[in-house]
Image: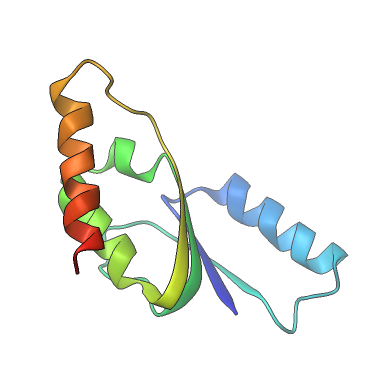
Length: 102
């Protein structure tokens, strides 16, 4: 299994590696640290993105990169700030719907 910590979050990646070691799963789980600037992150079982969209210039491309990085049936864990003022929140819902249709 390969898990990616997206968003250039060294603290999250280090914590994940430590948990994997403590659970004696290092031979089965690989933690990779990556930002979203280099395109798809590989074919991953799990992508954990913490505050990755908040800092991305092009949020739509960032979501596409995250989606393209997942194996079929893969999981995306997304933790980020939300614009609840109106237009931004609606736009995020539109992106989610578009990605789900692919």
